[in-house]
Structures are given as C-alpha cells and as structure tokens.
Amino acid sequence: MLAGLGRRGLDPSPLLARAGIDLAETDTRIAVERYALLYNLCVEALEDEAFGLLPEPMRPGSFEFLCRALLGAPTLGEALRRAIRFLRIVLPAFRIELRVAGARAELLIDDDGSLGPARDAPARVFAYEWLLRLLHGVASWFVARGLALDAVAFPYARPAHADDYALVYTEHSSFDAPLLAARLQANLLELPLRRDEAALVGFLDGAPGKITTLYRRDREMVFRVRDILRDALPQNLSLEEVAERLHVSPRTLHRRLEEEGSGFRNIKEATRRDIAYARLAKTRHPIARIAAELGYADPSTFYRAFVAWSGVSPERFRDQATGRKPPP
View 1 (cartoon, rainbow, N blue to C red):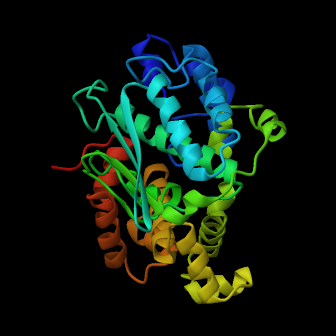
View 2: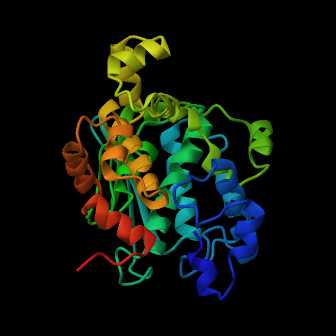
C-alpha cells in the first residue's frame, strides 16, 4: 500500500503515526480499523484511490461513483457487470471479465503489462489483491451477505505470507497462474441487491477505506476458532473440543469453516506458525521450549512443521529475524 508514496518521494512515516501503526512490530497484526484509516490517509495524500500503484490514478470519488453505478441493478450478476464496465474506464491498466459456465462463475483480472516487468513485485501483488477485495467487498455489501469464494488463482509466485490467504480469501488459493481467477457459485449471481440510496449514504461515510472492514463476519467462525486455539495452548485442541467450546456440533463447525473458505487444520497451523515466528524473533527461548508451548509432543515434530512453513530451520529463521550471522 505504501509503495506508491515511495514512488512519489513522500515519507509514509507521518501517515503511519496518524494511523497508530508501527511496522517494526512484526509479531503484531494490524487492527483492521487502523488499516482502514491508513487506506484513507494514503488516498488523501496521493489523490489516488489506487495508491499510486497504476500508470493512471483512480481519482478520489471513483469509489463512490462505482457504488452509485450499482444502485438499482436487479441482481448481483448485473451489478458486477456494471462495476466491470465502470472499472474499465477508471482502471485501464486492468482487464476484468465475469465469465459464467454452468454452475461456475469466474471473475477474471489481468493487467496490460504496464504494472512493470516484475510479476512478483510487492506493488503489483498488492494491486491485484486490492482490486479483488474491492469487487468482492462491494458485491458482498450490496447483497447484504458474505460471498464465499470457492477458489482463487493468483498471477504471481507464492508469497512468504501465503498461509494467510486461507484466512483472507479461501483455503483453495493457488499461485503462478497466467491471470487472477476467482471462482464462485453461479447461482450467487441471481441474488437480489438489498441496499438503497439511504443505506449507501451511510456506507460512504469512511469510504473507500471502509471497504476493508466489510463482512468481517464472513470470517467470524475462522477468527473465533483461531482465538480459542491460541488461548488453549499448549493444549492441542481437537475439532471436537473446539466445537464443544463454541456450543455447536463438530459437523456444524466443519461446515461453517468450509463456508468461510477455510478448514480446522489450516487455522491450527496458521495460528502456531504466527506464534512461532513471533517468539523466535522476539525472545531467546530455546527451540524445545517454544515447541512445547505450541503443543508439539517433541522438538523434531515442530522442526519439520517449521521448515514446511518457512523453508528454513527455526535457528536460521531466528538469525535472519534478529540480524545475527549464523556460526560458520
């Protein structure tokens, strides 16, 4: 998000301070409300709702007119087609298409090559993810429900934070695709829009950053499960035990997580991974102690899991995070 500021020679530090965000605290997730504030501050500083990441700016007010273009559409499918026609005008760097084949619908996003030659550049990666979340968030708001994405293929290499895609998009996220393809059930396109002008006026208060706070409840069960697993450590809870604490059946919990595009095992691994990263970077606790605190029966099991997450050993990760040189 901050890459565009750097391109314009602007210092992001004042904006980060106003949003209460310290990028040095790598073991702490940023509250979504602060992220939304930073979103709006960047747009204001750059006069560009696309953060200065694209060859042509998306002028302030574009988000409002995007939403107004959707008002009165009879169905979600028609609303998305209107959105695509509008975005083709204000975002010429992207080619966007809605394709329907039988029971499957796909939202396809590709760029014209003007985002730069580096497919994995952070600015390009963020631009794709921002546009997908923009379309998905607006669509979800207009139909007044979270819209589950069955699968998303991203047009860049698997990033270091790829495990988080299961929490943000869907567990069925893949990479190195020729273009971005987000798949959903075609029958969702028949949903009626449930928002009117009065609702839109309230929604636009705090926009466009407000889009990032939308439909957190479409991941509500994911977040609740993650919190229970984290608070129970070093106890290694099973799906059945978590379901009991949530006062639902294991079958209901499994279905709810599936509807939110995730799964119990994936959430458990992501929770352990985040805590392991933080404790290796911020403490000098022995590896065996960290493994025990995360509920692993022995250090070797933790070691194998960690290498699968990060591609390096816990010791190597700690050296890299703390700037220490490994022994010869």
